[in-house]
Length: 95
Figure (cartoon, rainbow, N blue to C red):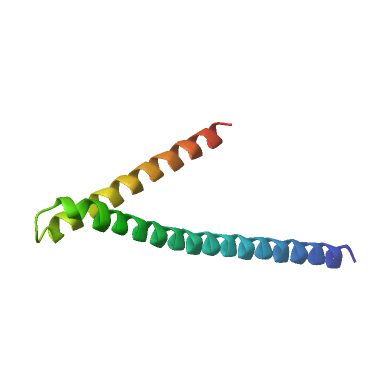
């Protein structure tokens, strides 16, 4: 009788762990999806910034320069966000 109870408890624990892992994966997927949407929104903002405010100061045919400025802005933004998130993670791990 004790073996059946232990097996049921083990099965319930295993099912709970699986549910938790599925939930963890769903949270990861949802976070990634929202991150992609946010990245696309920022992409549009930076493109408009370059096209409307910076491109007019460039000589005719300066599309290569504007693309370069766009790439540099995106890279700087990505690096700054990554650094800030890394510092936040370090602080949380130290606690």
